[in-house]
Image (tube, rainbow, N blue to C red; front, top):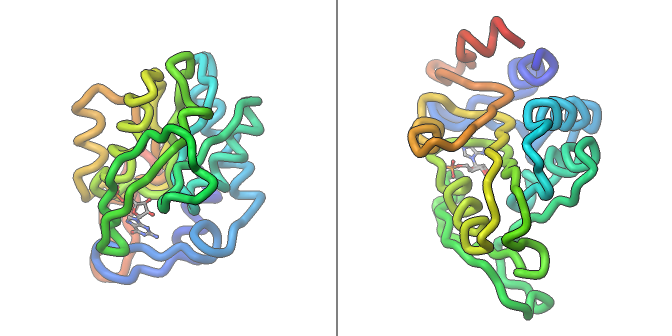
Amino acid sequence: MNLLNQKIVTEGKVLSDSVLKVDGFLNHQVDPQLMQEIGEEFASRFAGEGVTKIVTLESSGIAPSVMTGLMMGIPVVFARKRKSLTLTDRLYTAGVYSYTKNETNDISISSDYLSSDDVVLVIDDFLANGQAADGLISLVEQAGASLAGIGIVIEKGFQDGGTMLRNRGIRVESLAIIDSLAGGNVTFHAKEASAK
Ligand code: 5GP
């Protein structure tokens, strides 16, 4: 995705050799045109998989997920990070260690919105060590739903999450894969850079 790669280069801020800040279009301010293109791309990559529901994590997964849900004509459920008083029903829950915040949160989805009839596409903004994806997959498994795959906006290929998930046989589609942030420079994975 040209637009995504361009945005990462022009608006992303490399905070360290392992953290990229993209508050200008994904994590704080949201670029709707980019989200639309992301939604179209995920919808096209997962077309024909019989996906019935998108599952993501609040808050930064919601924008790309809603656009994907719009394109696929299916609902989006976002896992909540804190137990809400309104979440009184039976919950699927998993503990997720946050890479950027250095804390562990319980994430939950009400059983009202995920069932064994669902075929799920999990979407998230970043893939680093795979903790968030792992927690979301656990919620899908607790519901007895099937997993069609995982759509990631930005994968940091130099961290272990992508390899860990693909080694488990899970289909992971990342729209941008970053090989390195060393020296304050973003280096994209060669295949992504040439193919998209
Ligand atoms: P993981 O669970 O795969 O280790 O990390 C993924 C989660 O951590 C994402 O949901 C994202 O919110 C956050 N994250 C991890 N690395 C980065 C990063 O370099 N930049 C930003 N903005 N978020 C990140």
